[in-house]
Image (cartoon, rainbow over all chains, first blue to last red; front, side, top):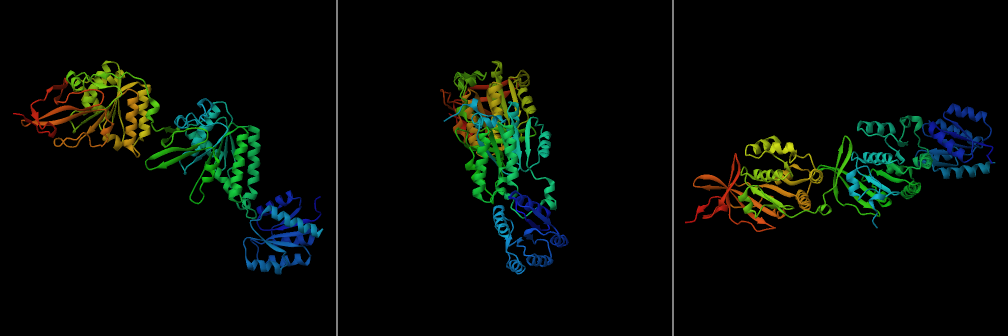
Length: 123
Length: 480
């Protein structure tokens, strides 16, 4: 059964978002991709059924942390996708409401496992 | 267990098939390894083209070079790629553009599936008998770890073979990414090399079959690859009558107890200008009279000079050339490897039926041919010619005009069945020449020396020089 809620994927690299959509789609999940902060804001205002957010912080400025905090305010679980292992990123992520940090490159099977668990819990 | 050559698949390169004892065993996978520019892809093209010529379905899977590039390069060489199927999995230029790059998943996660799907789809549809995959090492980057890579390659090769294909695949090995694992996984390993001494091919492994070991010469020409297998004399034994051939000079024949036997190697040694080449040509003149063909490989003297010189002493070399009873070839320095040179000689002996072969000179052979172990190669060539019943004349120069006697300076006189030596003599203040026989393996010979003279009427050999002592020192004295 396809989950009702959509996955919000955020990032600056279109190809990364396409691949996320492709692999999550194969896992049976609908995705909504945004590539800029303004688009992020609009989507957050207009879309009600976001079940989980995956935020790739590469290429964004500090404004991305503010958006993460807003996701937390809306009780949307979120994971930060980071280009490297970093204590500073880890700390910022948790401070702004992230459930955890996934370091690139992601392993598809593990990602689907995490998404599946969180969506099940949220539904 | 040996497999008959009729069940083999030709590689499209005659010399390589000879090394592989007839070709590749079908439905197996073979690794072609070598550095950049060694000819791996060209070998693959030969393999596919001969397949098409035999009515087999041939598939080229390229993971690196584009199909268009392969076709362009092949056309420039005159290769006809019509009938060869291509599966181009090389990266497109769009890959370089930002939107195509990604870092969220590893290439192993993203690329492997589509590539695998495309290969499976194409191979299942085509059912090719021959597959060339260039390069297999690209899969290394599409596996998450070494274990996965090994499993993927093994299962991929098994899949291709189960579909009825004989597979040739290449590897690009380096110190950082060696290809030992691929060598273990394949049924055969063909290695191409490019070194200062020239290009070579070596077969390291051929499951289920014997093969010719060692390095063999390889030449990349505008028409593709030529392989010249190392000469193995024992593979070329030919029945012949062990008769002596005359020089046409009765006195010389007397010294040699009738002449030089077929299937023997004769060293003609002496200082510069004493008449060694002329003596060899004299045997050839006589052979031409019997309708036999002779060949001279000259490493120093120009052909025209040799012909003119021969004619001036009543050896009709030019007429002999015209009639096909003589072939004179100038061997250009560093042009040929010993294997290639042996191939030229084999052609003259086996196809053109040459019965007398002269190398002028041994020192020239060693200086002019590229490669290592030239004495070993010369030994093999001599043995081969012996086995073919050819009269072999090896011209060996000694540096000293007079003085202590030495057979040759090359240190290879052990190759000789016969040794004929020539000397300058100073008798009563006059420079004269003498000829003698030092060794004759198959018959008795005259132990005395005779005076030797080259005139415009030809070679003259005098009566035995008796009553002289110190001949071998070059300054003899009459015994009183």
